[in-house]
Image (cartoon, rainbow, N blue to C red; front, side):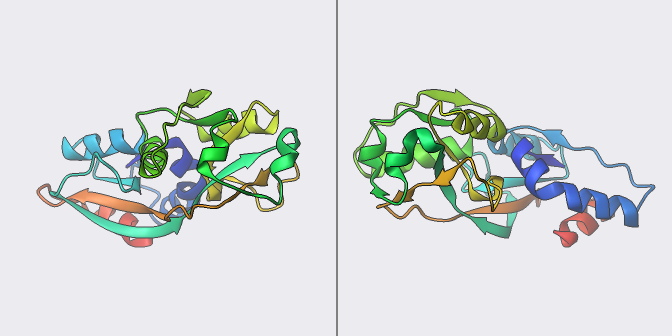
Length: 195
């Protein structure tokens, strides 16, 4: 299985637990990479399937893609930015604040950069990292406003608030993708069906 750290932590763990409970003798190997890198692992046959964010520039037309859930991306901040709490903020307004986001090799970064470009804005992040958890930690201590998938933010988080945007960002999907030109094992089929 190819999957990003975020997808593993916030989505995949209960499925791994259940699959292992049902099929204790089946060996499971999870390779952590960005969603784009997971698509490349899939293309080269190094994983049976990948669970990735979508759209994903790394996925090709030889790969079958099934949507398993939708999610929204959000900007989160702590009380250092309380002047933004309860207000509607535009992407242009956000440019004056330090933006914390995933690095350029991620589908999330591609998505946010394209949203800014769609509004004729250049996005210059303050910090780019490879971990949503670190971005959330940095937002929690007030280093900036983090852009993360909504499923990473605990429902009753007392330290962070979600900013209201004037622009509607489209929902994205989490998908399971497999390469139609390569044989898929019975175990891989069973796991994908659980998702």
